[in-house]
Length: 66
Image (tube, rainbow, N blue to C red):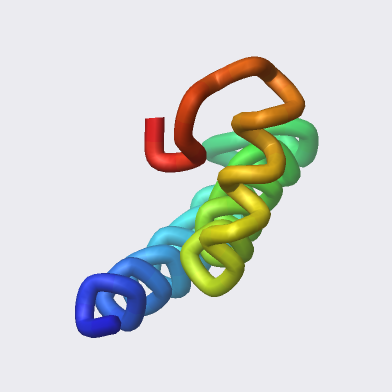
């Protein structure tokens, strides 16, 4: 559980950096949206690890952690 909390905190920090880079025009809107989606998915699969296994099954991978 400690790892999950640290990961969520790091994702929150990363999202704040994305916002600042977008505001400074260092990255485009499409790039920032991609990164938001990436970090949102990471947090989602951290909070719902069984969904990662469901996704892995869909793609024919043995475990969600792989």
